[in-house]
Image (cartoon, rainbow, N blue to C red; front, side, top):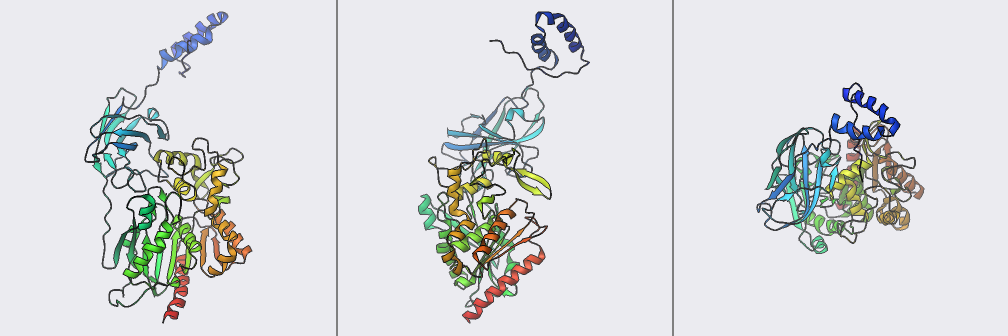
Length: 522
């Protein structure tokens, strides 16, 4: 069956167009005008648009990357500028990238790259210009970001001018290996790195727990002295390396403390120290293995009142979660700008009732991040970008923590990746991690144990629309008769919330809490 070519727009004064119009008027009586116009106008005027990209990308990897056949995800990056090692992608200005899942790819064998997923558009629709192409293979060895995880293989960048002309096949050889960062210890900053028996048993392979420990000035001169400990959980993308800059935090409101920065990263994202079906018993491993080791090795007080937990963003959620999960182990939490603490407002989505995570009831696209009144990110494109990563993204890490493990070994998806439709049966499983719901259901036993321990601070213009859930928690705790401090600050967003005034206030509140404990120990 004959298929008419697509119509291409030409200038209205094009001589070929003028002549065809005259011819069509004559042939119109015969009913051929439309067919002739569609048949002739495209090949004569513009021609079929050619793919901008090279004819093919051929990838090979060497035994320097892996001596075993590879099965997993391979990425192709199309960056305008090369990076020192690999291009790690950006939330706010992502570059085009593409991915293909492969099996039994052997060292030295050529792989013709045929992407199965892409962002933002298919490889054939790459706009003209100069690009630096790079291939990355994700060996999935435990690092959070598959584009930058230690142990992954990658190629050097190859510059290609994409201009619509025929281009030869581009060969990319993955012969480089991403190396792990080295923690540089100092006199007052130490690395703690231990194997976790609990996590190793859960995952069936050796896994480790890490933390950076900043010691107070008097620590070395008085080995018999015991100190209270502040445990900080970094936000998404952060880790224990933050302790290398934490020496100045070892005096909290005039009280000397050991300041510990924990590592919450894992292969599925940020595990928030919540025991889960996918990440394993990370919370239990923290309180039963890592913290006892730190406090024994570095002279912590070793009492609940001498342990404070804090964090911002995903770290803020983590600190609140740890306090309500282990109410008699920690002496207080100071949570700032936490991730959604009530899933009736999961960054403006009610996962229990709303039909779609991409679009609201009026069909409008849902925003995910803002700067003032300007929307900077939307759910749909952000989720599409994460879909190319496959693992380790921010939204994906929520599913990894809050949901069960699927039959395929991956976290159960709460929303359809193509349409955004919410699976309410899957969403209901998140109730196990709904902080507001947990507190309401267990207040008779939790309430007395949490007296004076909860402090939550949030800006009313949070960059990621997190204030709504905090306001719901504030109301719930008030109705329960809790003495929890939950405050929402006018005009503050995710970054501006932690100004000098709030930092000083939190330091004083922590110090007042610790002084009570230290006086009792004397």
